[in-house]
Structure formats: structure tokens, C-alpha cells
Amino acid sequence: MDELQLLEELGKGQYGTVQKVYHKPTNVTMAMKETRLELDQSKLNSILMELDVLHKSQSPYIVDFYGAFFIETCVYYCMEFMDAGSLDKLYQIGVPEDILSSITHSMVSGLKFLKDELSIIHRDVKPTNVLVNSQGQVKLCDFGVSGQLVQSMAKTHIGCQSYMAEHPFLTKYEEGEVDIKGWAVRAMEARKKREADAKEEKAATPPA
Image (cartoon, rainbow, N blue to C red):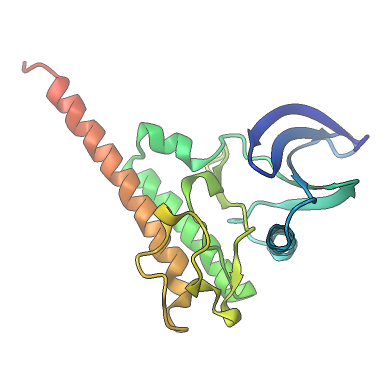
């Protein structure tokens, strides 16, 4: 921890916080997630799942993982800092269709990597779990509720209910489509928001 300089808090949840930190030896700015360990077994399994996915993922569409360490009752893991924040911020202002297309390409590529290379489904793809940086890169994060396809985990109700795919009880052949269907919901929301804003702007513009 002595090698890290705390810069600012990026977010806070039920089980811990995410902070922006500076790693002095490498001059790299990172996002550090702190999670308490005095939790039930399901939460511990979630932590282990996320660490395992981050460690194995070598993809331009998944946040880079720098390492993890334990201090007393907390686990800390350091990840790539995405300076534009999460996708929900873009949703608030609406997303142009060309940008939405680029975001969708990145998301589908990331989900395909998880499925093809790790046999993993994310199961919780929502705007707050999609990060963006100022270079225009879009990456997935937060793999705590991800599941192994071979265990038919897609048939359990885990993740944010409002962003689940339409049919949670799927055949083994369909399991890999859960994340894609879930992302389609998000893409449609963003497009509708943009269209609604455009209509409001047009209605508010006085005739020439």
C-alpha cells in the first residue's frame, strides 16, 4: 500500500469502495477496488470469480488487471483507470447512433471473448459495468456474478433484474446468448433516449 497514492474516491457500494490511485514505481494511474472479506460465502465466491476472470482476461475489451493484495480483512485489486467513467453518464445525455454502434461492437467483442476463450457469461451487463476512456475505448468490468457456461449458470436469477435478458431459462445452446440479448436492451434504451431528446428539441424550436 505504501507504493500507492490515494487520489480520489470513484464510487462506493454495499461491500466496499473504488478509488483512483497513483502507483509510484510505475507512474501509472489505476482504479483500486477495496472489498471487505467479513462476508457470507456467496460474496466470497463472487470476489474469487471476479479476480479469476480479471486475471485470465487478455482482451482490449476487458479492463486491464494489474494485481491484487490482502490487508487484514480487505482485498484490494488494481485495474485500469478509465477516465471517462461508466456508460450511464453517456446515457443521461443520449448517445448518437454512430457512437452507439461503436460501443455495441466493443461490448459484443468483449462478451464474445468471455464466452469463446473462458466459457464465461457476464450476466450483469448494465451501463455502470461498462467503462469508457478519453481515447474512445469501451471495456467491460465487474465480473462478480459471472458464471461458467458448463455449469448452466445462465438459468439462475443473478444480476440486475431490469437488465436481464428476456428469457432467463434457456437451453444449453442458448446460454451464450444471454449477455448479447441483455446488451440489446441497453442499446435500445440509449437509442430511444436520443430520439426522445431530438423530438423535444424540435418541438421547442420556434418555426422560422
